[in-house]
Length: 269
Image: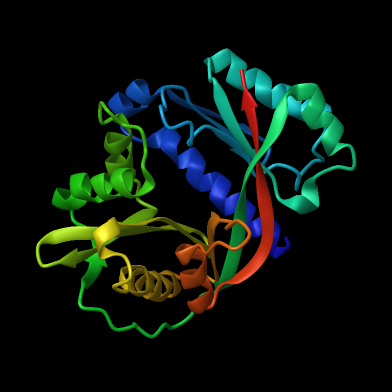
């Protein structure tokens, strides 16, 4: 398998892990999933942020076709999912992808930058913040930082509850940065065999620029290497013309290389 196939499979596997969170959380969020070969369809029906329902990991074991997209979208219709984010590596898009999009009502949304690097020892950058894995008592604060930093619509706390519960998954380790006793930044590492996936990087606005994410990146690189990972993958948003994405800059400084841009194709029922 080439690196794109490896990292896409890892991210898809991570998303499918959400189908294993605690049953009360699954019911409240309306979480269900289906595998289509190596591809994954994850429905989070009651997600007010319209972020979590997605289809990804397709195109490596069998071609992406209009018939496959029809089958995937039929799953989401059956689940009552209103918005789905379809994310496919550019190398698997067929020549008639534009026509498939038109016939199925897929519109192009934001672009994700997919990055990777080899695992290996990492030098910890200086920071005045304390860095380390979270404990069960930290989970609510860990989730709350992401809700605030990402601006998720979560009036009843259902997304925060789901985020906190992700730390119950054995392959996931949550990390944080603390200023004294205050949890101010978050990150997570998902280990899938020889690949580590970095997710959940968020910092409270008033603590940005203090080295939290650089330190959390270095710690997770070190821990992924210790866990036996060969590669590490991450993704972030593509900045607009003339704009900067600090998360992308942090990843590049940490030794990650851009693999490709991956548009998000949005389907609305």
